[in-house]
Structure formats: C-alpha cells, structure tokens
Amino acid sequence: MKQSSDRPLGVTRRRVLEVGTIASALSFVRDPRLAQADTLSDAEASPNLVTVGLQINGRAHTLTLDPRTTLLDALREHLGLTGTKKGCDQGQCGACTVIVNGQRINSCLTLAVMHAGDEITTIEGLANDDGLHPMQAAFVRRDALQCGYCTPGQICSAVAVLAEHKAGWPSYATADIASEPMLTEAEIRERMSGNICRCSAYPNIVAAIRDVVEGDRT
Image (cartoon, rainbow, N blue to C red; front, side, top):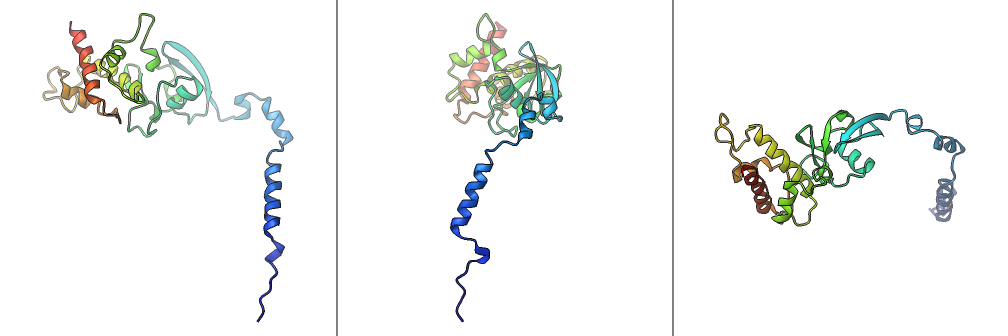
C-alpha cells in the first residue's frame, strides 16, 4: 500500500522556522503594562522585598532585598564588597568567611536579613589608615597565598582564630580542655581546617598565623 507523502497537519520545516522567528521577534515587543512597572519603586514592583539595615566595616547600610538573599550575595552584588569570595556556595570551602560580632561564619550559609544590627567585618574592613592588619601583613610577608582566591576568607578566619584562642575556646586538637590551649601548629591547622586552599599554601599560612601569635606575645 502506498504511503501518503502528506506531512501531518501541514507542518513543514519552513513553517517551523517561520513560527520560531515570529516568536523571537515578539519577545522583544514590550508589554505597555511594563512601562508603568518601571516607574514603581522596588518595594512596589516586588512587594516581597524587605528592607534591612546592616552594619558593615563600621558603616551603616540600608538595603532592599529579596528575603532569600544570602549575606554573601548582599555583600558582593548589592554593596560591591567583592573581597569576600563565592567558592563552593555550600559552606565547605571557607572562601566566603566573614566576622560577625567577633565570630567567623560562612556568609553563603546565612541570610542577610538575619544580621540586622550585627557588627559585620569583611576583608575590606581589617585594614585602617595606619596600614594593613597584622594578619594581612603576615600573609604578605610569608607569601601565604598563590592564586589568592581563598586568601580573604583565610585571613578573616585567622583573625577570628586568635580571638577564639584568647577567649580560651578549645578545639578538637586541644589535649586538655580544662587548661588554656596553646596555639601550636596542630592547633592552628585544626582551627583553620574549614578554609580550603586549593593551591596548598598551608605551611606558609600556618607560619603567618604563628608570626602574629608570637608578635602578640612580645
């Protein structure tokens, strides 16, 4: 029996291309209703946005954000503080480490709206008019970096490690939690284990931290 050569519903290759071209052209035609939306404020156009006040590096910032915005994205995308890096975005690499109320956190794992009124310090806030923070200077002096991508998180974490040690917090490597832990190389490595350096600059990172510790003692 002879098969029909007619195409179903009259659909041809040419017709598909024509329809696709028309659809693409229509996608560039603006809906008149969108023009009105352009004149609305962010809060009016997107009623789900929230306003949050953040204290970052000693300065107050007021942001209007989607409540799902992470602290990391607020810093980078809304405030231009790109020193804090986005690595794994899953809290595993430590590249996004910042200091909040004196304690280090992974900024990719927390929402910006959760930190209204908190004192947030990023890598940009460690140095001052007198020069680099001692930890920053030690990292430079010891060449404790290669590509440098993880370095801001490493430095913020190292600064917090010294504060934790000063407060007497033990770590998994502390032999006697009843006594004041000493910042030995093993202690430093354990406390910094949440910050990954894919270039493997760990020996120099440890040396930089020890320099600051010994400088504090003198």
